[in-house]
Image (cartoon, rainbow, N blue to C red; front, side):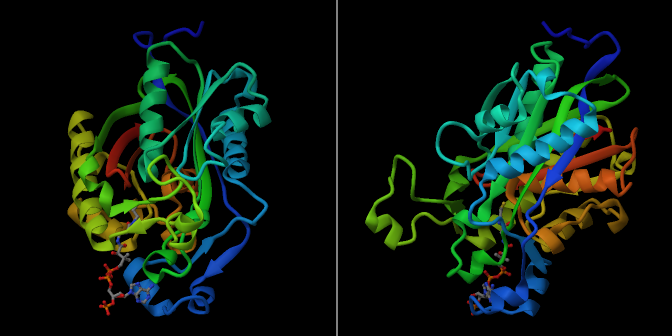
Length: 334
Ligand code: COA
């Protein structure tokens, strides 16, 4: 049984991070050859120049595994020491078994329970929240939280309003006990199912199982109302940031780095302006990876750590939103 360190000078925090991205690059110029779009439109409306795309023979678990292995290495934790593996994804290898179970096997995490969670692009916020609760309660010592998606698999490359936005990738963090002057400071999560109609994939579930007709009518690709999603994102992320700051008794001056979901540079800039933040205190990966769903925040966090944009002892504020609608933010001292 794991020891509960809460009350003994310890609390849940991030022990290590990792990420994994496909090598293949899809540029805006490549997209110009596929749909009626232009590099100029994509860059000014989204901030994206290129994104990574997995090979046809690959699956989400391949990248989830790599990101997980890298997070374990950075935390100095062995796979056998894990108590729990969570994978947040909307593009699992298959509906079941869970992608987390596939990763658990390939990692050799023989003592870990494993399950997938689905909160779309907010998955890493939900995963960290659960992992923190499991560690703080003493139920788990080490939890591996992975967010992984191959959005290229559900992107309609005949729909110019969505296909320019998305890319593939995975990010991960190992959550365990850290000295109590570090670790998770506060969380805020939200959901509003009434907004579900703005971003969804109709086909492939129990409502519309795959059929010849569903494939022909392109129901197995994601559908989005861009402007509604945009407004929702700015509003929801603003609320979440304010809540985590006030719950942690912090103000923006105490935050060393904002790590926002990378969906659109204009959404990130709207949040940055609302918070009166210097661009140097914001992590941007949107230009090179596009929107990689729930993995965008852990990929950005991992790159920020590796690039020295945030140091041990400093405060990172992660904030995301996604289909559901779902949203959430986390303040963490690394
Ligand atoms: N290339 C060229 N033109 C395009 C285009 C593309 N890839 N996609 C759309 N357009 C056109 C539209 O057809 C429209 O033309 P019209 O005025 O002749 O009708 C025009 O550009 C403006 O479209 P609009 O949808 O108003 O653009 P926008 O400024 O809202 O940008 C998004 C579109 C999708 C980039 C933006 O709404 C967005 O980022 N929304 C949030 C998406 C998001 O975050 N999703 C993930 C959530 S996790």
